[in-house]
Length: 183
Length: 193
Image (tube, rainbow over all chains, first blue to last red; front, side, top):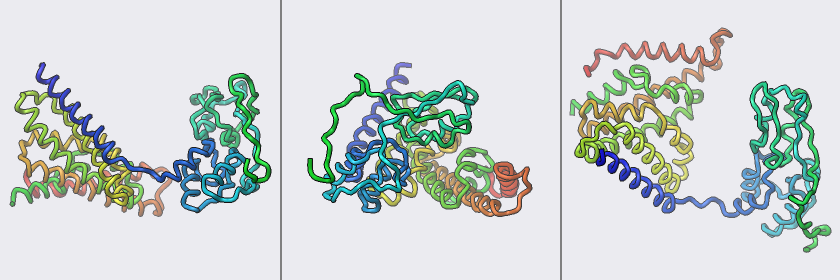
């Protein structure tokens, strides 16, 4: 009995050490430029840039496939930061991709929700809670304001409301950039 | 030599793991929609099965048997298989990005494949030695790959065929699988054991 427990523990320990060692030894470095671009992007995963999320867009920028002005949620600040990082000229947001808006969160009018789960499937960050035939609700802290859930709702009860600034998420305003000049 | 050839023929055709022993049915139905993915899955399974049957033989022979704790076989084998799969995934990811693109997504899927554990346990039951275990694992996965690729090719063909509405989708796939299983019954009696 004791030998059995010991043998299995030892086996697990050896395997754990092996895996731990090999995860360091065989670590694969991703594309460092793509990583840094991804860190700048707002992580709304909204897909407005034409790519299925922020990471693919970052990889596309890194490989020169995409331009830096395709991110409406990030707006001017993200374009400026990307231009600084990549040593390119900042340019205005591509109007085809949408306009810059104040930060928003989705809000579900729960009295009219029919519990179809369509918005749950659309949400890229799993910020909507609910089950079939049960009303759904948005976890406001998780919501990135990407608006992807508005379209699939068959009863149109999802609206985007601006985030009200209060003491818990007020931030120092970032320095404004005037027409591409350095701040 | 003849004995080794017999093991291969027996595992690939006569006692085919999918169609005769009904092990590994989930990837058989799940990953057989496209021929390309079926080939990738087949390759990955061959790799993992051969490796894991060798490793579980070693663990059984040099750890479990000497200590007289064969009753812990199942849990020890699961541990071994999971580690082997994880380890190979890391090594492949580091050493060969091309191979990783072919096998990468399938490797973790195989960890929970019942055929992998099945081969390890059947090896012990049949009292195979080292080479026999390796061959048995290889044969089992070769049979699995063969059937998977054939099935995927058939499903691709059926997708464009005129199937009656009630049979479309999984229904016709299961009917096809049943017919294939029937066909493989024809091999029984070719080799004993």
